[in-house]
Length: 199
Image (cartoon, rainbow, N blue to C red; front, side):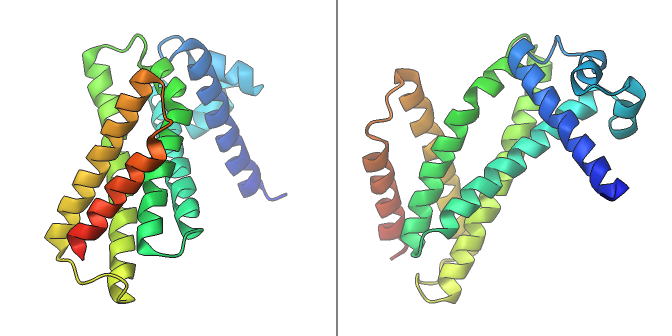
């Protein structure tokens, strides 16, 4: 195995280990020592990849966002029509958020307002941007193939903003009641509203 691949694997192992520790103990309690012990490598080898706890945590968040976006994208690719893809995007978005909610709860515990706005809002904005790009690409492909009428870019941005805000609201409300039974119908209605609007 090439040393580059070994380095990539160790870097990935550090992030996965840190992620598990955050989930178990919360962000505040996890030190670089804890990470190096759990990975089974010296602190020096951890510092080779990440300068400090802050860098490790940021890399864990970046990794998580990439994972979520790749999962949503893969699910959308399994669908054929623009409408099916939008619906799949919404359903996958709720599913991936729910699956990772315990991780976010664990890392937010013990954060003060400044840390919360720095890390959580930063991650939220990064995620919104990545989702926005997925949907802009979907619009672009739909218009190019004449599946949907031409929609001005400003209009696309507005629709995407409404869609993303709606999904987050739906997920939050259903999550509070811990009742996702009506999710499919809700998302179907939301999707058809988008389709009606652009037709």
